[in-house]
Image (tube, rainbow, N blue to C red; front, side, top):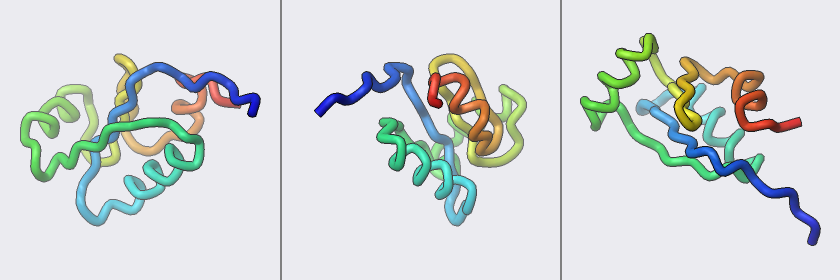
Length: 84
């Protein structure tokens, strides 16, 4: 099996309960076999404050390495991770 090396950047998904776009982001990461850690901001006040501090007002918020993405922006995700 000749598999390309997956990105080594840390991916964190800040999500909230019942968030459709959060579910889309999770499905996208799973489909592309991208490992990610999920943090529910409704249960983690500090994480919610971190998102707000970086200008994000809702979920999902995606942190890749040191780059913050407000919302599920597939184009930005692919650019940062070097997909396609």
